[in-house]
Length: 106
Image 1 (cartoon, helix red, strand yellow):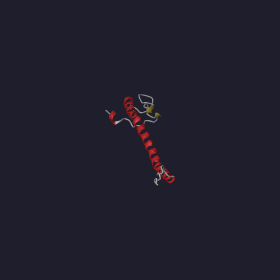
Image 2 (cartoon, rainbow, N blue to C red; image 1 turned 180 degrees about the vertical axis):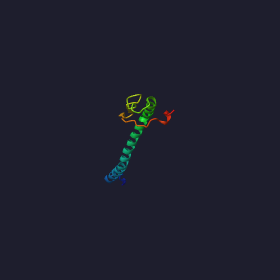
Image 3 (cartoon, rainbow, N blue to C red; image 1 turned 135 degrees about the vertical axis):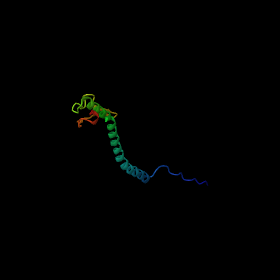
Image 4 (cartoon, one colour; image 1 turned 90 degrees about the vertical axis):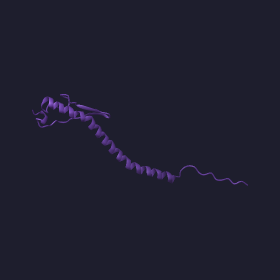
């Protein structure tokens, strides 16, 4: 008489699946806040990069007009809005400076 070996069972047990799900949940609770913080930092960095030319525009305006009151966004070569890769940003800021600048003194 020939004896046959029982075939090994394929698949995962319920406890193995529950352990894997628990590990994934623990990793997700760690990773999601880190990812959200990363996206906030990336958005701020993008905003700073996009608004850097405004600094030069304001400087040129002040040197050209001799005062800061005419250097608001949308006038005298100063852009009113900035477009980033993720969208459109309106920047409003009041230009304040003490005149004359050292470079403007003769």
